[in-house]
Length: 317
Image (cartoon, rainbow, N blue to C red; front, side, top):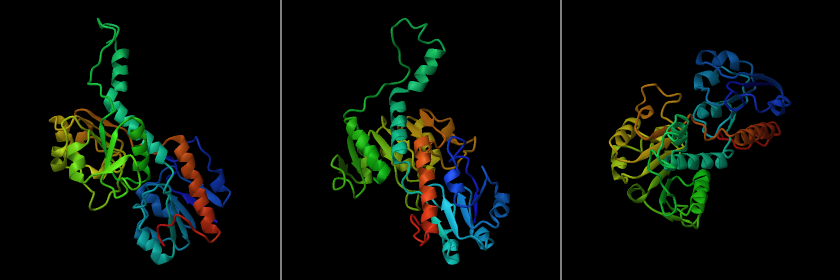
């Protein structure tokens, strides 16, 4: 059985092992696959794994041996699932591997906005403390979390974990999810207008759909407190880049921290890369080694289940 991984580098840049997958068949591994080589590298494979390499209808229809597509991520929009269904091809994803890692990163970004530890460290290394007349200094306002209101938009596994951490910090948590209050004792329900108006920090944890695309826009940003922070560790397309950059540059809100952008890698001209008080990290919330090891284990288990005739985590049937 021929197994091909089209873009394995981000999952495993060398600190994990492919042995468990290799034990299931003849493994061909590519770190990355350019668009022009997708078909050629996929030919003959019964099992294909992809992370961000797109598998279109045109490609799927030209792969007669293909029986299974494993997406090495939670989102599976890179695969034409309907085309796979029509061919009887199982498509699986990895639904729950990075909850703790993404929640941890969410608070890393929140705390960076609150304390600017990186910027203060840079200032110290550049001599600012050594030349300072006082025993301490700060270049940004320092913000405490206790008593602040966190608005969570999207209260799934990750949003729920973020709510738990916020509770430990003594924050008030509100969410627009129907799971608020009934599913979490420390979360109160609010409509979106209430979240934008009352939250000191808004954290996005919802999927990208036609309804949520560009939900953070000029109108919504104008509803927020001028002292508020925006956090996005979900999907870059939730944010209208130009509107957020303008809001930051004009002081409409106090800051933003983003682990995802609408285009990845971003165009160098993306206005968020030069916006005031905007922290941008390169889509790493999912990438803690522990989370990637869990992803690898689930990917192998998904394939084993398929081979045993009991597919799980299928998104195609």
